[in-house]
Length: 102
Image (cartoon, rainbow, N blue to C red; front, side):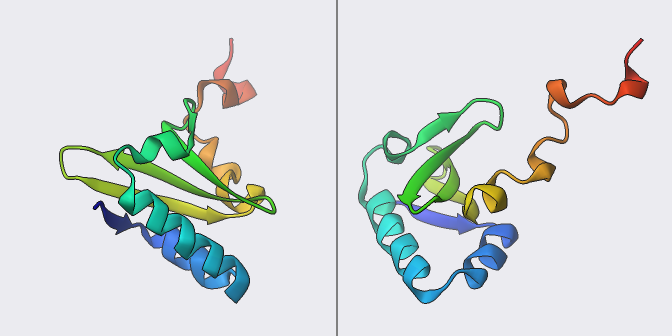
């Protein structure tokens, strides 16, 4: 069974979810914890180097897998805007400002 490393952003976003949505997250976390290969339950997002586990109703869990520590890092949770918000774009090569271009 996998251990979870809940990041502060995940914890804050989880608290904002209603009880029905929180219940969906709990069920998904049980599936992740019991999986031999948790990344197989998500879709890899190469630009962010994370996996997205889709919960339906536009919600998802963003996570990373660390095989050395046998942990699943829970990064974000919520709807599309909450999980793929603007701050994910910082540092991305395609989000360069006009001032940095020649």
